[in-house]
Image 1 (tube, rainbow, N blue to C red):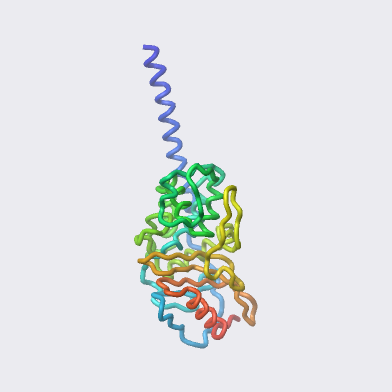
Image 2: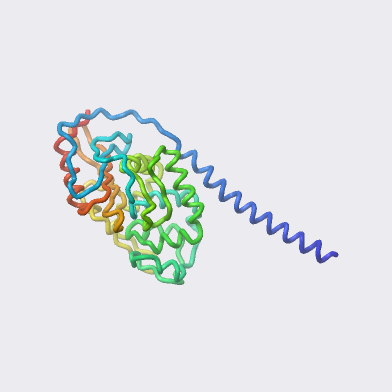
Length: 291
């Protein structure tokens, strides 16, 4: 009888610990959502002297003020398209909220079997989740994304989708952390909205994406973003899958007569990101005036 009492006592204790852990995880998601309510900014006064340009090799784009979210130019901005590894930018931002970044994880064979070899990660290497942000964002490592998914996929995806809903990004849906799935979709306008808020609330994530390289405990990672070396670059994320084409969200510090402005560029379904980005930045330089 005494053994049964002791056994049930320990079972009760274990169950209580499990329930507390689940409750804390749920609380972390819910508690973080207050950060993502609507925020009002005064719209900048600007003038545009020409019609928005056409990008013959891209499906859609938006040019926006990265501080206020004001749209400066757009094409097919409200159609939802696959966004590929642009997904990793909000994933990294929400990981700051719901993942214990100083906790460690040991990479498994299943982690490094993810599509692609970007990140140069190997099984049995031990990283903190903070360290894994660097291959995730600099080299777009799907192996790093798989490591997050192994332990935190459900809570991270819940937080990412709740964030999109709370922002009013109604055409956005996240189904994995890597962006490999064609079910990760958003519109250019939604991504402008999301990026404006993430830039204000998670600058650390954008800081990572401006690095030329970063040396980790086992190897180094080089920034492979095609526009990272261009003048004024403030961070962002690009991606590619067959379904999405080439995609990018990028922020730049742009000069104007009235002063410098932080502008964002979203391009979806491109065949040549560097050329399309050059076209949009040239349009802004020649035709947009701020007061």
